[in-house]
Image 1 (tube, rainbow over the protein chains, first blue to last red):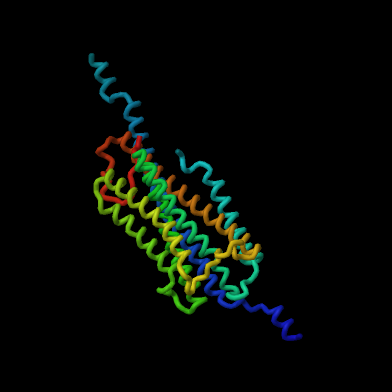
Image 2 (image 1 turned 45 degrees about the horizontal axis):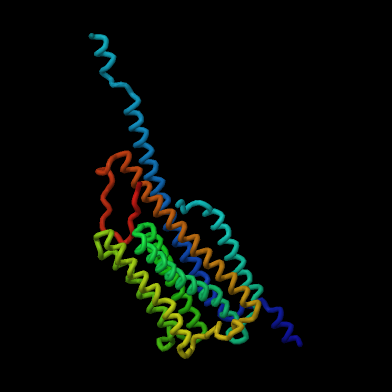
Length: 77
Length: 245
């Protein structure tokens, strides 16, 4: 009876827990690697988007600014 | 189509379903009388295998659509589906080997049809990306890859059927009986695991599609802003190219 109770209340982990943990860790690792790759891709997109944003600002500035020589030319005429 | 829409809701649904599945597997499903605690590997290994095989078939269906319509988006969908199934395939082989070692004392059993047939399917699809990479012309690459995906996709259910009909030596036939062969509690845990794994596959598929789509859009934007010369020509690659408008 004491033995049965001891078995029922034992804190010991079940057999083969290492194998089970390893199998679930495989899935976890696969998803984690995938997320890391997606993170790297996202960082690249962010970089590219910032570059394109700068390029768009540059182009907008070029179109908006008046030619530098224009006021000078007007005065001499 | 914008693949990123509703991605947050899908991700949350996946997380909740996977958590519920593992909770059911460990705290609700009874301990297997024969295998004991190690049978819990079943709830990750089998759904992963089923979803991987389903993904290969899905890739084949997308490839049929590509051959019918000539629309490159279907080629991309097939490519991403097969790519993800291959990743899950690696998981199936590794978790299967772990279970085999725990249960039978060997990492691999060569005379078992279930194991070897899955390995054959996996190796068949492992040639998909090198085959794509070997063809430089993008249109021809897409067409050949689609033909491959259709033929290999048809091979998957045939292979599955052949294995079911074959005599099992070591690997269990869990769904062999007419009533499912699993106690109700185990069956519920398994079905939730299967739903979780399917959701995980769909979520990752949509993430990958959104990523490819965004990449194509960025190239198009760069071309518009700086002209064709500023965009580096894409070298030889296995990945399909999307038309950028």
